[in-house]
View 1 (tube, helix red, strand yellow):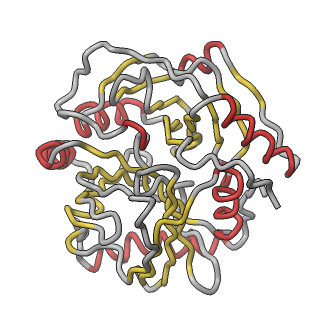
View 2 (tube, one colour; view 1 turned 135 degrees about the vertical axis):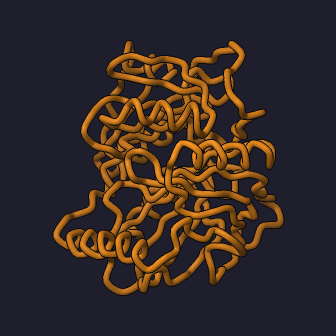
Length: 330
Protein backbone atom coordinates (compact mmCIF):
# COMPACT_ATOMS: atom_id res chain seq x y z
CA UNK A 1 0.00 0.00 0.00
CA UNK A 2 1.11 3.54 -0.73
CA UNK A 3 1.58 5.91 2.19
CA UNK A 4 -1.53 8.12 2.20
CA UNK A 5 -0.68 10.37 5.16
CA UNK A 6 -0.18 13.32 2.81
CA UNK A 7 -3.13 14.16 0.58
CA UNK A 8 -2.20 15.90 -2.69
CA UNK A 9 -5.75 16.18 -4.00
CA UNK A 10 -6.35 19.66 -5.47
CA UNK A 11 -2.64 20.05 -6.22
CA UNK A 12 -2.65 18.47 -9.71
CA UNK A 13 -4.14 19.53 -13.05
CA UNK A 14 -3.71 18.52 -16.68
CA UNK A 15 -1.26 21.12 -17.99
CA UNK A 16 -0.50 20.06 -21.57
CA UNK A 17 -0.91 17.22 -24.06
CA UNK A 18 1.65 15.98 -26.60
CA UNK A 19 0.42 14.51 -29.90
CA UNK A 20 2.66 12.76 -32.41
CA UNK A 21 1.61 12.85 -36.06
CA UNK A 22 2.90 13.01 -39.62
CA UNK A 23 -0.22 14.99 -40.57
CA UNK A 24 1.11 18.26 -39.21
CA UNK A 25 -0.48 20.46 -41.87
CA UNK A 26 -3.87 18.93 -41.13
CA UNK A 27 -3.38 19.35 -37.39
CA UNK A 28 -2.45 23.01 -37.82
CA UNK A 29 -5.61 23.71 -39.83
CA UNK A 30 -7.76 21.58 -37.53
CA UNK A 31 -6.61 23.31 -34.33
CA UNK A 32 -6.24 26.88 -35.61
CA UNK A 33 -8.91 27.25 -38.32
CA UNK A 34 -11.30 24.75 -36.77
CA UNK A 35 -11.12 24.55 -32.98
CA UNK A 36 -9.64 28.03 -32.60
CA UNK A 37 -6.33 27.58 -30.76
CA UNK A 38 -3.50 30.10 -31.02
CA UNK A 39 -0.46 28.82 -32.97
CA UNK A 40 2.55 29.80 -30.88
CA UNK A 41 5.41 27.94 -32.58
CA UNK A 42 5.61 26.31 -35.99
CA UNK A 43 8.66 24.41 -37.24
CA UNK A 44 9.12 21.36 -39.42
CA UNK A 45 9.37 19.11 -36.38
CA UNK A 46 7.14 20.82 -33.83
CA UNK A 47 4.04 22.97 -33.42
CA UNK A 48 2.84 24.39 -30.12
CA UNK A 49 -0.54 25.93 -29.33
CA UNK A 50 -1.82 28.26 -26.63
CA UNK A 51 -5.25 28.51 -24.99
CA UNK A 52 -4.51 31.00 -22.22
CA UNK A 53 -1.49 32.66 -20.58
CA UNK A 54 0.48 29.41 -20.54
CA UNK A 55 3.14 29.41 -23.24
CA UNK A 56 2.01 25.95 -24.35
CA UNK A 57 -1.05 23.78 -23.82
CA UNK A 58 -0.92 21.48 -26.84
CA UNK A 59 2.10 20.15 -28.73
CA UNK A 60 2.03 18.37 -32.09
CA UNK A 61 5.40 16.85 -32.93
CA UNK A 62 6.29 15.14 -36.18
CA UNK A 63 6.32 11.34 -35.87
CA UNK A 64 4.55 8.11 -36.77
CA UNK A 65 2.33 7.45 -33.74
CA UNK A 66 -0.83 9.32 -34.86
CA UNK A 67 -1.75 9.41 -31.21
CA UNK A 68 -1.45 11.17 -27.89
CA UNK A 69 1.97 10.25 -26.52
CA UNK A 70 2.28 12.33 -23.32
CA UNK A 71 0.32 14.12 -20.63
CA UNK A 72 1.90 17.03 -18.78
CA UNK A 73 0.73 17.16 -15.16
CA UNK A 74 1.07 20.54 -13.46
CA UNK A 75 1.84 20.23 -9.75
CA UNK A 76 1.27 22.88 -7.11
CA UNK A 77 4.86 22.83 -5.82
CA UNK A 78 7.98 20.73 -5.29
CA UNK A 79 6.49 19.15 -2.17
CA UNK A 80 3.75 17.63 -4.33
CA UNK A 81 6.41 16.34 -6.70
CA UNK A 82 8.29 14.73 -3.82
CA UNK A 83 5.14 12.97 -2.61
CA UNK A 84 4.59 11.50 -6.08
CA UNK A 85 8.27 10.59 -6.40
CA UNK A 86 8.18 8.81 -3.03
CA UNK A 87 5.09 6.83 -3.93
CA UNK A 88 6.52 5.82 -7.30
CA UNK A 89 9.75 4.74 -5.63
CA UNK A 90 7.77 2.36 -3.41
CA UNK A 91 6.77 0.62 -6.65
CA UNK A 92 10.32 0.73 -8.06
CA UNK A 93 9.34 3.37 -10.63
CA UNK A 94 12.02 6.00 -11.17
CA UNK A 95 11.54 9.46 -12.62
CA UNK A 96 13.94 10.91 -15.16
CA UNK A 97 14.41 14.66 -15.31
CA UNK A 98 14.41 16.65 -18.52
CA UNK A 99 15.20 20.31 -19.11
CA UNK A 100 16.60 22.55 -21.85
CA UNK A 101 15.02 22.51 -25.30
CA UNK A 102 12.73 19.56 -24.57
CA UNK A 103 11.22 21.31 -21.55
CA UNK A 104 11.08 24.66 -23.35
CA UNK A 105 9.08 23.08 -26.18
CA UNK A 106 6.48 22.12 -23.56
CA UNK A 107 6.36 25.57 -22.05
CA UNK A 108 7.89 24.51 -18.72
CA UNK A 109 11.16 25.11 -16.88
CA UNK A 110 11.80 21.37 -16.48
CA UNK A 111 9.84 18.16 -15.97
CA UNK A 112 10.14 14.63 -14.61
CA UNK A 113 9.01 11.72 -16.80
CA UNK A 114 7.74 8.19 -16.24
CA UNK A 115 6.24 5.57 -18.53
CA UNK A 116 2.60 5.91 -17.52
CA UNK A 117 -0.53 3.81 -17.96
CA UNK A 118 -1.14 2.48 -21.46
CA UNK A 119 2.35 3.65 -22.53
CA UNK A 120 1.42 7.32 -22.27
CA UNK A 121 4.37 9.33 -20.98
CA UNK A 122 3.49 11.11 -17.75
CA UNK A 123 5.47 14.33 -17.38
CA UNK A 124 5.26 16.12 -14.03
CA UNK A 125 6.26 19.76 -13.68
CA UNK A 126 5.86 22.69 -11.27
CA UNK A 127 6.91 25.78 -13.25
CA UNK A 128 4.92 26.66 -16.38
CA UNK A 129 6.33 29.39 -18.62
CA UNK A 130 3.75 32.17 -19.01
CA UNK A 131 3.11 34.39 -22.02
CA UNK A 132 0.87 37.48 -21.83
CA UNK A 133 0.93 38.13 -25.58
CA UNK A 134 -2.69 38.52 -26.78
CA UNK A 135 -4.15 35.37 -28.30
CA UNK A 136 -5.16 35.21 -31.96
CA UNK A 137 -8.30 33.10 -31.75
CA UNK A 138 -12.01 33.30 -32.57
CA UNK A 139 -12.72 31.81 -29.12
CA UNK A 140 -13.66 34.35 -26.45
CA UNK A 141 -11.84 32.19 -23.87
CA UNK A 142 -10.96 28.61 -23.09
CA UNK A 143 -11.85 27.38 -19.61
CA UNK A 144 -8.61 26.39 -17.88
CA UNK A 145 -7.59 27.87 -14.52
CA UNK A 146 -7.20 25.62 -11.48
CA UNK A 147 -9.01 22.81 -13.27
CA UNK A 148 -6.41 22.55 -16.02
CA UNK A 149 -6.87 22.33 -19.77
CA UNK A 150 -9.55 19.64 -20.06
CA UNK A 151 -9.84 15.87 -19.74
CA UNK A 152 -9.10 12.59 -21.48
CA UNK A 153 -11.07 9.35 -21.82
CA UNK A 154 -9.12 6.09 -21.98
CA UNK A 155 -10.32 2.54 -22.67
CA UNK A 156 -8.41 0.04 -20.55
CA UNK A 157 -8.13 -3.74 -20.42
CA UNK A 158 -6.74 -3.44 -16.88
CA UNK A 159 -9.05 -0.77 -15.45
CA UNK A 160 -8.43 -1.70 -11.81
CA UNK A 161 -4.69 -1.19 -12.22
CA UNK A 162 -5.22 2.12 -14.01
CA UNK A 163 -7.66 3.26 -11.34
CA UNK A 164 -5.20 2.29 -8.60
CA UNK A 165 -2.43 4.29 -10.25
CA UNK A 166 -4.48 7.48 -10.35
CA UNK A 167 -5.94 7.07 -6.87
CA UNK A 168 -2.86 5.72 -5.05
CA UNK A 169 -0.13 7.77 -6.73
CA UNK A 170 -1.97 10.98 -7.64
CA UNK A 171 -4.83 11.03 -5.07
CA UNK A 172 -7.55 11.19 -7.70
CA UNK A 173 -11.10 10.83 -6.39
CA UNK A 174 -14.01 8.97 -7.98
CA UNK A 175 -16.66 11.45 -9.08
CA UNK A 176 -19.28 9.08 -10.52
CA UNK A 177 -19.92 6.09 -12.78
CA UNK A 178 -21.79 5.42 -16.03
CA UNK A 179 -22.74 2.05 -17.55
CA UNK A 180 -24.02 1.87 -21.11
CA UNK A 181 -24.13 -0.56 -24.01
CA UNK A 182 -22.43 0.88 -27.11
CA UNK A 183 -22.39 -1.05 -30.42
CA UNK A 184 -23.26 -4.28 -28.61
CA UNK A 185 -20.59 -3.93 -25.90
CA UNK A 186 -21.47 -2.89 -22.35
CA UNK A 187 -18.97 -0.36 -21.03
CA UNK A 188 -18.37 0.77 -17.46
CA UNK A 189 -17.02 4.33 -17.10
CA UNK A 190 -15.28 5.61 -13.99
CA UNK A 191 -14.82 9.38 -13.79
CA UNK A 192 -11.87 10.71 -11.76
CA UNK A 193 -11.14 14.23 -10.55
CA UNK A 194 -7.96 15.84 -9.26
CA UNK A 195 -9.50 19.17 -8.34
CA UNK A 196 -12.81 21.01 -8.70
CA UNK A 197 -13.16 20.00 -12.37
CA UNK A 198 -15.78 17.24 -12.56
CA UNK A 199 -13.28 14.86 -14.15
CA UNK A 200 -9.84 14.99 -15.69
CA UNK A 201 -9.67 11.27 -16.55
CA UNK A 202 -12.44 8.87 -17.54
CA UNK A 203 -11.58 5.16 -17.57
CA UNK A 204 -13.79 2.92 -19.73
CA UNK A 205 -13.77 -0.88 -19.60
CA UNK A 206 -15.91 -3.54 -21.26
CA UNK A 207 -17.84 -5.89 -19.03
CA UNK A 208 -16.80 -9.54 -19.12
CA UNK A 209 -13.90 -10.03 -21.53
CA UNK A 210 -11.79 -6.88 -21.46
CA UNK A 211 -11.48 -5.50 -25.01
CA UNK A 212 -9.90 -2.34 -26.34
CA UNK A 213 -11.43 -1.61 -29.75
CA UNK A 214 -9.72 1.77 -30.16
CA UNK A 215 -6.41 1.92 -32.05
CA UNK A 216 -5.24 5.04 -30.20
CA UNK A 217 -4.20 5.28 -26.56
CA UNK A 218 -7.10 7.61 -25.78
CA UNK A 219 -10.66 7.54 -27.04
CA UNK A 220 -11.01 11.31 -26.82
CA UNK A 221 -9.60 14.44 -25.26
CA UNK A 222 -11.64 17.44 -24.20
CA UNK A 223 -11.25 21.22 -24.29
CA UNK A 224 -13.70 23.55 -22.54
CA UNK A 225 -14.83 26.94 -23.86
CA UNK A 226 -16.44 29.85 -22.04
CA UNK A 227 -19.59 30.57 -24.08
CA UNK A 228 -22.18 28.72 -26.12
CA UNK A 229 -21.18 30.92 -29.08
CA UNK A 230 -17.62 29.55 -28.73
CA UNK A 231 -19.04 26.03 -28.87
CA UNK A 232 -21.29 26.54 -31.88
CA UNK A 233 -18.63 28.55 -33.71
CA UNK A 234 -16.10 25.73 -33.37
CA UNK A 235 -18.68 23.22 -34.57
CA UNK A 236 -19.45 25.29 -37.66
CA UNK A 237 -15.75 25.77 -38.47
CA UNK A 238 -14.70 22.10 -38.22
CA UNK A 239 -17.77 21.05 -40.19
CA UNK A 240 -16.91 23.58 -42.91
CA UNK A 241 -13.37 22.19 -43.04
CA UNK A 242 -14.83 18.74 -43.74
CA UNK A 243 -14.02 16.95 -40.48
CA UNK A 244 -16.40 14.20 -39.42
CA UNK A 245 -18.59 15.07 -36.45
CA UNK A 246 -18.48 11.86 -34.44
CA UNK A 247 -21.29 13.08 -32.19
CA UNK A 248 -23.43 16.15 -32.66
CA UNK A 249 -24.20 18.58 -29.83
CA UNK A 250 -25.55 16.87 -26.72
CA UNK A 251 -25.50 16.97 -22.92
CA UNK A 252 -23.93 14.55 -20.46
CA UNK A 253 -25.97 13.63 -17.38
CA UNK A 254 -23.09 13.61 -14.90
CA UNK A 255 -21.00 16.73 -15.55
CA UNK A 256 -23.88 18.55 -17.30
CA UNK A 257 -21.64 19.94 -20.03
CA UNK A 258 -22.98 20.55 -23.52
CA UNK A 259 -20.53 19.38 -26.17
CA UNK A 260 -19.80 17.88 -29.55
CA UNK A 261 -17.14 15.40 -30.69
CA UNK A 262 -15.11 15.69 -33.88
CA UNK A 263 -12.71 13.14 -35.36
CA UNK A 264 -9.16 14.54 -35.27
CA UNK A 265 -6.58 14.13 -38.05
CA UNK A 266 -5.02 11.24 -36.09
CA UNK A 267 -8.29 9.37 -35.58
CA UNK A 268 -9.09 9.88 -31.91
CA UNK A 269 -11.88 12.28 -31.07
CA UNK A 270 -11.69 15.81 -29.69
CA UNK A 271 -14.60 16.99 -27.57
CA UNK A 272 -15.37 20.69 -27.29
CA UNK A 273 -17.52 21.36 -24.22
CA UNK A 274 -19.26 24.22 -22.46
CA UNK A 275 -20.89 24.86 -19.08
CA UNK A 276 -19.74 21.81 -17.12
CA UNK A 277 -20.40 21.88 -13.40
CA UNK A 278 -17.67 21.75 -10.79
CA UNK A 279 -17.58 19.57 -7.68
CA UNK A 280 -18.50 20.85 -4.24
CA UNK A 281 -16.34 18.57 -2.07
CA UNK A 282 -18.46 19.15 1.06
CA UNK A 283 -21.70 17.96 -0.51
CA UNK A 284 -20.76 15.70 -3.42
CA UNK A 285 -22.33 12.23 -3.57
CA UNK A 286 -21.14 9.58 -6.03
CA UNK A 287 -23.89 8.52 -8.42
CA UNK A 288 -24.24 5.78 -11.04
CA UNK A 289 -25.85 6.77 -14.36
CA UNK A 290 -27.31 4.44 -17.00
CA UNK A 291 -26.47 6.50 -20.09
CA UNK A 292 -23.56 8.55 -21.38
CA UNK A 293 -25.75 11.28 -22.87
CA UNK A 294 -28.84 12.91 -21.43
CA UNK A 295 -29.80 14.11 -24.90
CA UNK A 296 -28.16 14.57 -28.30
CA UNK A 297 -24.66 13.32 -29.14
CA UNK A 298 -26.02 11.51 -32.19
CA UNK A 299 -23.53 10.54 -34.94
CA UNK A 300 -23.30 12.79 -37.98
CA UNK A 301 -23.60 9.73 -40.22
CA UNK A 302 -26.07 7.41 -38.46
CA UNK A 303 -26.77 5.08 -41.39
CA UNK A 304 -26.11 1.34 -41.51
CA UNK A 305 -23.12 1.65 -43.85
CA UNK A 306 -21.32 4.03 -41.49
CA UNK A 307 -22.22 1.85 -38.50
CA UNK A 308 -20.70 -1.21 -40.18
CA UNK A 309 -17.64 0.75 -41.30
CA UNK A 310 -16.85 2.01 -37.82
CA UNK A 311 -17.77 -1.08 -35.86
CA UNK A 312 -16.13 -3.64 -38.15
CA UNK A 313 -12.85 -1.80 -37.53
CA UNK A 314 -13.58 -1.64 -33.80
CA UNK A 315 -14.46 -5.34 -33.76
CA UNK A 316 -11.12 -6.40 -35.23
CA UNK A 317 -9.20 -3.96 -33.06
CA UNK A 318 -10.97 -5.45 -30.06
CA UNK A 319 -10.00 -9.00 -31.04
CA UNK A 320 -6.40 -7.95 -31.68
CA UNK A 321 -6.25 -6.23 -28.28
CA UNK A 322 -6.52 -9.66 -26.65
CA UNK A 323 -3.07 -10.49 -28.04
CA UNK A 324 -1.43 -7.34 -26.65
CA UNK A 325 -0.40 -6.64 -23.07
CA UNK A 326 -1.45 -3.23 -21.78
CA UNK A 327 1.28 -1.48 -19.82
CA UNK A 328 0.54 -0.52 -16.24
CA UNK A 329 3.18 1.06 -13.98
CA UNK A 330 1.75 -0.70 -10.89
